[in-house]
Image 1 (cartoon, rainbow, N blue to C red):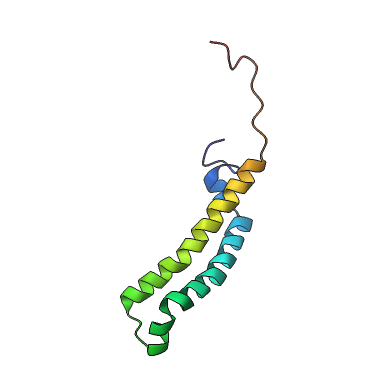
Image 2: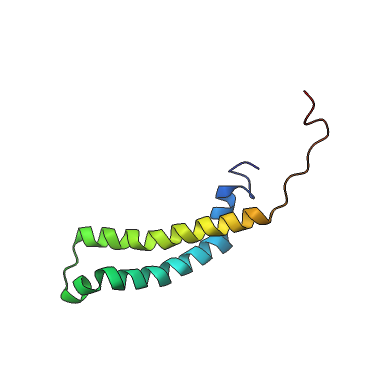
Amino acid sequence: MSEGEPGGFFGLAFSPRVVRRALLYALVVGAILIAINHGDALIAGHVGAERWWKMGLTVLVPYTVSTLSSVGALRSMVPPAAKLPGADAR
């Protein structure tokens, strides 16, 4: 199974169900992490370009973790490809 096929890594990573799940987790977990890591600056109004960049990365981390976990779980459920006759012959 190659990476570009529907059952390949990228095919699964960009499938609607994986993206939807990852976005949900990124919003929930990202919001919690932003509140923990940047809440004081947000309340004080000290939010510059650097902090926006860091908050964006904070949301990207749970999105990436969710996507990698989902793709790994989905790929582990696929049975190994059946061996083709004569594949071992050299």
